[in-house]
Image 1 (cartoon, helix red, strand yellow):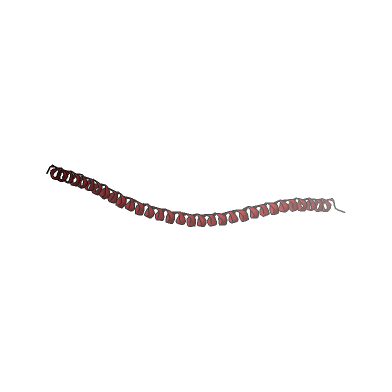
Image 2 (cartoon, rainbow, N blue to C red):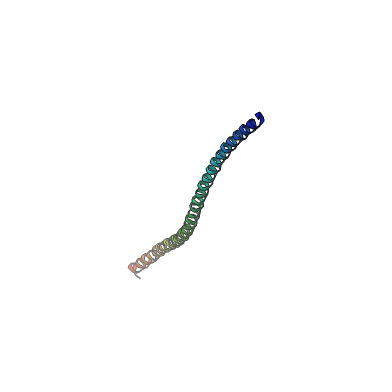
Length: 117
């Protein structure tokens, strides 16, 4: 009978150890499930943040393209203005030169008329 009691005691200890082992692993599995849920939620948040960042980037690129087009238009206007100013300066110089020549001719005509025959 000694063996029967020893066998029962061994089975009881084995069941207690197995129950503790299963309880411990159940806690580990529950902890892993919670960590998995947290990581999935974090992934979803990061995907949402990424999508918002991509949308903001695309909007900024579009805005930058519009600003560049506006600046290119302003550069064209300034180039035309500078070119026109150079043309006006050239015209003013030519007018001044022509005026000086005309005054010289007028002076010569006056001298000729005042000397008389």
